[in-house]
Image (cartoon, rainbow, N blue to C red):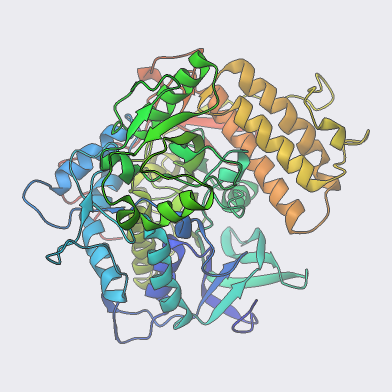
Length: 573
């Protein structure tokens, strides 16, 4: 479908993407000027939502993990949630942004419940809380055992359809419209293939991540790094893209995206076992630690998968009905079978740099959710902080727009860029496509001129090269091999069809080149970025690598803030 309203004229706000971040913003901005179930007065603005699939088809829908927030209980506190977030981020979190997340998160969860989201509860009526990897206590709320994202998405889609001025489904954003140093909307491909200008006073990037850069991923097919690529082409700063988080317990199965075996299973006592049936890692360690341990054990034992043992979990079918149904469909019974697992690309911790209010370096352009780099996640996202980040910063940028905000402030991770506190360095140059042509299976899909005979084949080649060369553990050699494949394919993109498939391939290549440049430059192991040739972390690399679309990187000291300052990030604009 569909355009629920004509696109002529200028919208007040255009939201790109229909996940938790984008729709949290859209609902707040578009709701009528009367009390709403979303926790206050709506903005009453003319808001459009543009998404390349159906409104309900986003990465949010696939999220099995819950929402981490301190909703009450003497044993937990926002300070403890903050400490867990900073620890998982391995020294690269922005503490001011993380403080905003943990302080404002509980009210956003309660607002979502007021909108109609139904979370799992204990027999007495209290919310059921789970513990996941990296969390020091149980604070994660779930819906349907492991169907939290679908429930969050349902509530937000219903509210958006009731309030948005325009809903443009199956439209594909091609590039940002930049005029006079300000973002004025996008050029998009309409349903009939025409290029159409969709103009807006404010544009919100909420396009999700780039998991489809890799061949093994938990991300839906739509996660092709579109927002990241559009920002880079417009010269907007992005950072931390080397930190692709791999989820350790994706089901080892031909299905793609890979079915996810929620971290909640390990929180309830499921065990990780190697090929010999032995335990080898703390199941509740942060995801980067578990994925790296799995990759090392798989290499040592010469296998391509390990095992998740959930046989001792009681009432599996009723506690995790979604996972139970998926396993039954492929003939696995968690009561008796160990479940085959392997890490899969899951979440991009970096993205388009924003201030503490969701503004990017380009006035008129805002970003929230996985496409954004707020500094909350640092080098490795704490489990179940992603839905929370989308809810918090989607609402935060909406309130800022309603208050008259028009551009970025020198706060959070964006401050060093705006203030010029950066050190320019030469980023690794991509290999020339003509020299050292890679010899990989399937490259006969390119003809002599370098033009892809089949865009789908070229996409597959890219994904396999990135999984092989820039996966859980990388090295200078593996990154260079992936870079040579990317260079060959990038040289051929100009010959790709001018359709959505060709546009997605171009975006994937842009995202891949940025990931490879950052991963090559960062000669250490930190969080989700592991280098076999540099296995230790280095204080010299306790900084952020920024790209602005040129072939250069910028290294800067991260904003740290004071974790104990309860007023962090709350100064008036």
